[in-house]
Image (cartoon, rainbow, N blue to C red; front, side, top):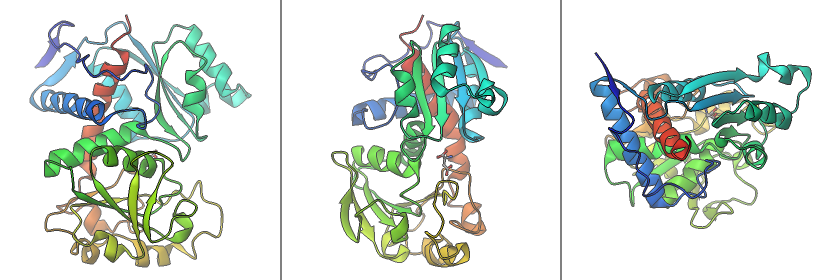
Length: 331
Ligand code: ASP
């Protein structure tokens, strides 16, 4: 049975709608706004679990996904989310668009904008690409990942996943292991989790840490983003309430940052021995795609404490919440 809810039967929560009509990063969201999105996403998750949920909250809204970088989870979950809310979703892959004929990001965005698109979901290899587009178009812009800068919907779904798993996350210790420097997930997750009161312990090769970060307390150039850097994975995961593994972003790294990947796996990889140092039942997250056997062992990736599949499921619900909130003013 498909449940179709009329537009009026589930009112979008407007109390905490972020002041900007764009979602470009998590820096601009308050902890209340993050919590509001998490709560809305949980409602959508439960509705989807109990029925083949379909609503027309966004009927008449057009959403274009414009991806200049590869994606499986993010692009498909935005499409799924938009369609579940009744929007018209059109996917544009840079590889098959006029970008291949040399059209610039701006001209591509302006072309789509002039077709009357309501929301543009953009992924681009350059940091700041979504901010740039948002200054030139009428559409709402949702950042689906820009270079090594930000991946706000991933951070929101990660907050949702951890909260659903361990309950109150304020004061919890999250060990974040791996490529901090080139990971937009690391940056957005640090900011979002810190806003929600989570303590973050980091371990990474020194060449994959932001400039100037050494053992001890460090922070991003954002208020309240303090993290503790440890010299070993063992120290970082010790007594952790949860572990976040990060993919080695080999596509962004310059040569010579790592002696070799086998060595990386031996020194920095999350395996069962290292997981045993965390609190009993501490869950393990990974934003995907995983380099299985490299930053995460196969037993951990597919073991009973892995939340990788849950993160993907929550990704659809969180993107429904984001589209509902940020498209609420349209139409
Ligand atoms: N899928 C995430 C991103 O696009 C994580 C990753 O690629 O490692 O940033």
